[in-house]
Image (cartoon, rainbow, N blue to C red; front, side, top):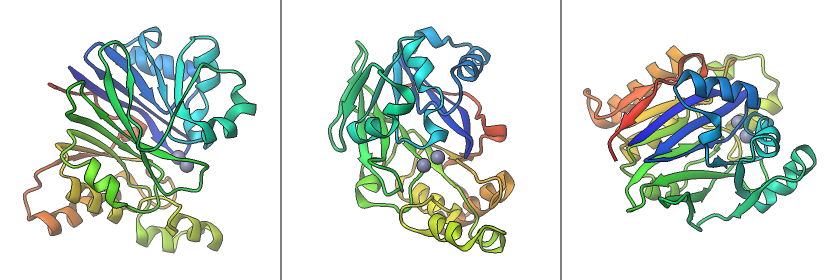
Length: 261
Ligand SMILES: [Zn+2]
Ligand SMILES: [Zn+2]
């Protein structure tokens, strides 16, 4: 059984619960351990059952719960060495296993396969993750905090069942916003974040069964605008009837998606 639930996804905190068969883990832990534990209870899961956390990069909205989850709940953390160097002073000694772009690693006894992909973002060694079943079927793609699409992502994430993709800002709302110029430049730049347009392009190119739009800006986007812009761009690419289910995690939380593997 495949179960995915976005526990939180805003610029204040990101964390997604994934279960493949009997193995469960978080992708990012940008909420306090207490909030994560509560959110898991609400979806019928227990923090003690988690195998650990796979971490994309060092920004605060992705790491807040790592220290407590590691030290008090004894959860392992899979992350790149450069990311660990960046968060070491905040999290101290944690049970860390180092991963590298392009080198598949496995979680748990069932051998869930996870491939880290290089992404373009203003962090030390940021990654996206593709989670595959033990027999190699692409199940979950997680692409947050990314400034530009690259061909490796497009190729690797093709036909993934569930795609969580950043849809950070609406181009129009960003230009009209009161953000200072340097911040607009950062968001638009190649090490910034995906716009609604880029999210739609990525969905159209990778053709997931379900796409969850995430990391939606509170100042330069809304859930309604993100969904409307992505759907209209997708309709342009693919014709009027969308072959994908596109959804937004309202209040940062998605519905639980269960799918057979
Ligand atoms: Zn970031
Ligand atoms: Zn972020």
